Image 1 (cartoon, rainbow, N blue to C red):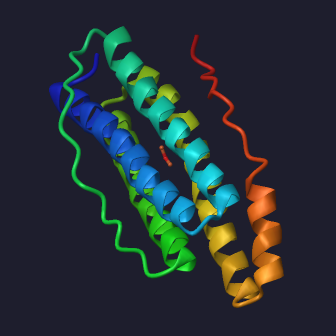
Image 2: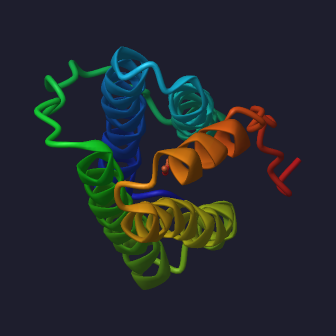
Length: 171
Ligand code: FEO
């Protein structure tokens, strides 16, 4: 039995995940403005991933007979200083999302809401990948510095990223 408090927090997560897609859309636009098509592609895929995450929470609330409430989205901060700043802000945002997933897991655990604990485990694992991905590119950019050919190689690498729809273990 999911409590009102847990449903409210699950609903907030729908909005946070859509906000993530909104923020990464701003980052895609910034990379595209620099003609870094590979970096723009990285964020294009990230936008799709975040929309998929939002829909997973949306569908879970529905399956558990809760009411999904769609809220408005804040304007993302798009005042990026440079490419490194983009990934630093992305990494910090993912750390925030991790704290949100942990909060949800804490509430579900306190309430012994085992179905929700099981649902959230996918997101706990996903956040490890999300933070690793942003942190890794941020560190590569620090190594690259002003080396244009290395930046070009990384752009080529990120152009290969494709969206793979997430699969939940819960049927
Ligand atoms: Fe939905 Fe990037 O976490």
